[in-house]
Image 1 (cartoon, helix red, strand yellow):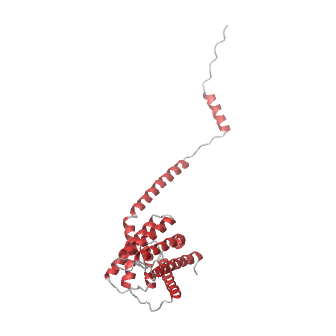
Image 2 (tube, rainbow, N blue to C red; image 1 turned 120 degrees about the horizontal axis):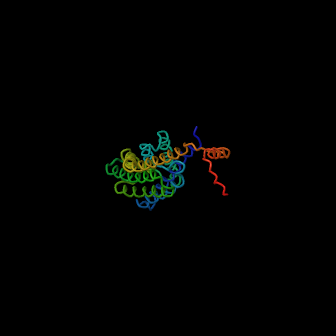
Image 3 (cartoon, rainbow, N blue to C red; image 1 turned 60 degrees about the vertical axis):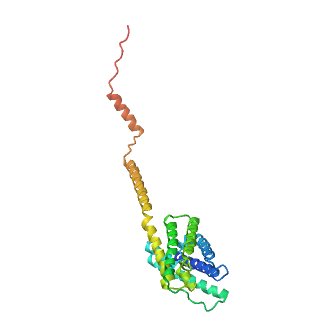
Length: 262
């Protein structure tokens, strides 16, 4: 049995991937099917979905990014697997909804293997994953994270469109019938793994060192405060102070009286 929060995470990934897929399908089968318009629409949709759902599931919406996050230990194994299933489910639901609206038939698979397509998808997804890694590790605010992730998708898709369809998402590629294990599946996965791990390897160490230094300074401050607290503070009562004055008066030498004048 799933708890409510875990179910909300899976539904979030299902809806976000479905919305992204439906947007790409709509633009691809329209008069605005140029790479620039498709990439911009996908980026804007992803920005909105990140702002709406990042607080629920992290707003991954991409099996390749899910695998990349798993390799840098940002997602647990079971969580990553459930995310991938939910993402493909959302993309499939978007495809059937699109068929219901448009009544299209006999859509052929165009995901044949070609090295140029593979390299283009790796390159574009690398750019996309690198921007997502920056947003995750720098812990940006929700609005900035949405802009970073959406902008990364637009940039990566435009670069990849030089040699491929610029999909960068195996779930979306499945619904677009651009399915190919050696191109639109392997390419995005390799790009995402490279993007996340490169950022984690080269650019997170400084952050970790700064955090460790801040923790050391905080520990020293706590130790100093504990040392001050541990010193005993002697408090005297009014009776003890009076007795101490009497004792000091007895020990003090008596003053000689001056001789009386005749």
